[in-house]
Image 1 (cartoon, rainbow, N blue to C red):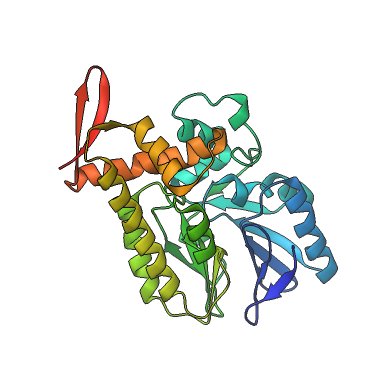
Image 2 (cartoon, rainbow, N blue to C red):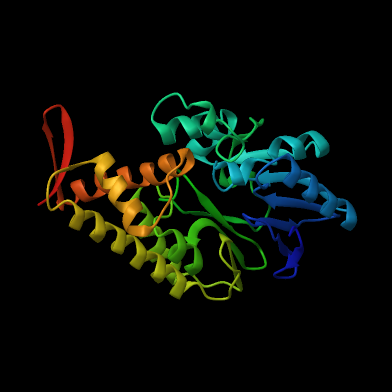
Length: 292
């Protein structure tokens, strides 16, 4: 873990639970794409930098999930690097309590206020194309989270953040986190068409072609949507839908899974309603969902 792997002439990634991109710039300077999950991850990244005599100038966060920004504060304090995050992700990175609050839908209890869902706040600026090193381009990848982006480097390596889950992850957990199902499907359709020397997804193996994996992710979204629609043959409230999905897929409920899967299921319900596959009705002061 935390092994440095070279993908192209100047583009690397650090093998970790969420892969960290590293790109060599000029004169021994490097930038990172994301920073890992916490201070310990940041410390291991700093050791990689020191072994190679590299100076970190900037971290470009793809999005604000805690496992991608957790090393920000430590690395900035150690190196003085600049931090950037796109759009709404910038606000969540500045004020990380927003993530568990958003997931829970209110003030998060202490079981949700930990480093896996709430990173340390960091001094981040809004990411624009003008902030990027020469030759870099930014790829909008909405759907998994609000304003997630990826990056293409000058030597044609594409970092894809969290827009792809591995087959193993999908088969094990079935319901992977997403915020906007419609935007996510559009992103996956776009990713299927991309060409690059290498693709580096954060939670799947690096590959020269990710079109088949993108299609597998599409199928899984469609499968989950069909499963939810089938459950709603009779009117069901959200908690009953969630309980039946956990039972069907053999998942175990805890606070983290409740908010991560629960938020995702709510997003599916909104999408299915907006596309005319579910109706939402209020009966006996309950919001019930039913197949059209």
